[in-house]
Amino acid sequence: DGGITQSPKYLFRKEGQNVTLSCEQNLNHDAMYWYRQDPGQGLRLIYYSQIVNDFQKGDIAEGYSVSREKKESFPLTVTSAQKNPTAFYLCASSSQGLSSYNEQFFGPGTRLTVL
Amino acid sequence: QQPVQSPQAVILREGEDAVINCSSSKALYSVHWYRQKHGEAPVFLMILLKGGEQKGHEKISASFNEKKQQSSLYLTASQLSYSGTYFCGTEDGSGNTGKLIFGQGTTLQVKP
Image (cartoon, rainbow over all chains, first blue to last red; front, side, top):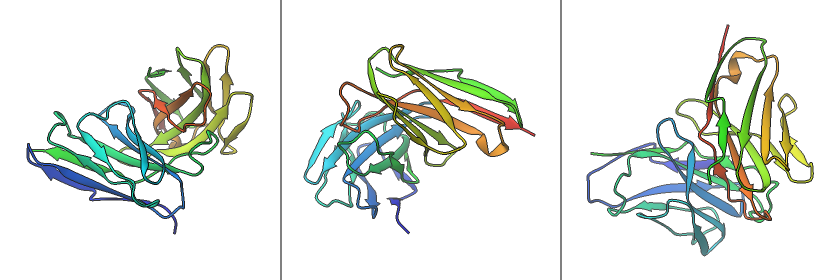
């Protein structure tokens, strides 16, 4: 079955540590996205990538980093510079990233808690 | 700038209708609608493009008023499965970026 997988489902981090969230898709989609969701809030875009080896900052990129070395993978690193990283992180992908006519498919999410 | 959704929350009985609105201060190229159940990933419902094109589920309808920079999602004859939080995502400018800005969400609860 095609889809998007995120791991781990739950992640606990101590203050000052970097952590990497995994996102893999086998939908052959060009574009991939990372969102952050806080309780009772909408989705805020962290980073997005429309093609391999290229990515752009979203609205809240500070304290985060990404890479896009392969089409199917778009890992997100939450660095120690992110002051309030506890949140629900969602990865999404869409085909033909330069077209607005394509829905985004979301992964199941990773819930990150900083202890 | 984040689009504004209204109402923030609505409670319905099965079979009743609801309208959820999404309003932006910017000229929009497209509006996407998603539904999210608690603790789960958002699921695609509808895309509306400037110029009138639409793509979405048969039982979901929506409108897009380009001049007013508004979109509305119409839920008719609601079912228990319609419960969840509805988000609109807007794309401004000339489009072709796929970059969406999401509203804060509208929580819908359908009761038997």
